[in-house]
Image (tube, rainbow, N blue to C red):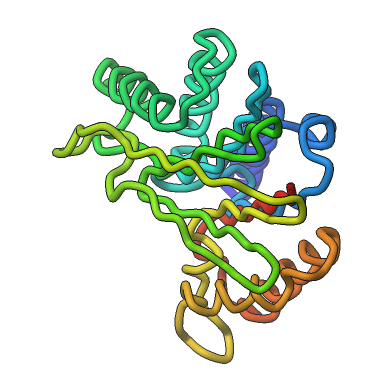
Length: 258
């Protein structure tokens, strides 16, 4: 029995590792980001070997599309939804050449809902929260739309939270169009896209979630550092806060400097 359980655990471990390789192959690699953004950092830590968070970027004409998503669940179920989301974004932006974030979200919702409705193997309440930015360096501006997501914009000592719509990408009672915001930027401004995993992490010394206000204060404290140092500060702060507590969710924070 012990030998059989050991063999089963080994098979499960191999399956997870193979799923990890597939998911990593779909996510943008470091070369993609370096070609599109002069200065950025990415803190990405799935709760399990594979996760329900994803990040994505693509260049289309004069626009660079940037996205961070948080799919229902984590582990294998969450990873399956990320693959649907990445595939749909590739189709909408790369094939259909769509660059307006609100339209991308509307089309993404249509594709995700269609896929879920056609499958008997997926939960029809599944979906994702996602933030999408479309950056235009020529006009020094970017458009933003979000599904249950917001972004933070930092300019020198000022930080602004820009909120998306209070509805997910997926089956939902409200299927109105998503709202788009256009924001001008100056060289040196930063935007932060993130999922809720960092904010939802419980602490070892304080048995509470890290929370939105602590997250904003962390960014205020590190905003003047270079992006390698910001990433290191994000990681060290997360590890210190979590301590020996279990990680409760997938974590993604993406910072980009214009």
